[in-house]
Image (cartoon, rainbow, N blue to C red):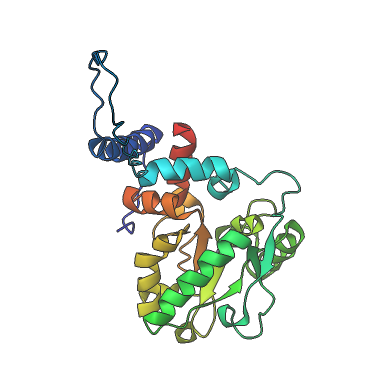
Length: 264
Ligand SMILES: [Zn+2]
């Protein structure tokens, strides 16, 4: 469980990711036969039949190694985005797709995610449906301009200090990546509500979203580390391998991504 959060020193994060990497690598290496260097004597006569060379069996990548490759393939998947680390100026995803209506809260149609995140979000929602859960998104990609309006709305509603606890400044939102979706259910009135976390749907998401590549960025009691209050509805796609490694690490997402960055 990642519910018991306290501030951890930076060296511990680096140690944690190093441990994960070591564990994953040693597991992978354990499955790999160690090549032995033996001198092959020259044959004195030509063999009449050349034995077939067996195809080498590829060693399966550990989740950690696959995560590192994913981070190289699409660095933005694992960028650290928080109050002090903005997105690059003018960043916008280049392969946004419109989500199917059945994935979206009625009245919020037309929401977009980048193509890879959209595919995995559809898988997540389908798996939830198999459990009898109707989970949908009401907010996905937000451009810099849309985040400017969103943040201004919250400042007007709550004042600057409270707004900064619940909404990101323009240029500092994971939603601008096009990989992040806020979800809701009928049980919470299709609103973005902390109450989601204690419903069967919210508990299922907490325990299973990582299998589809999604991480909950803002866990309960995580505010001293993340800077944001609890958001059980906010799911960021970071790739299946990285999400599996993150889940195993029991770190908050930002700690995990910082440690991954440090490792790389
Ligand atoms: Zn969100």
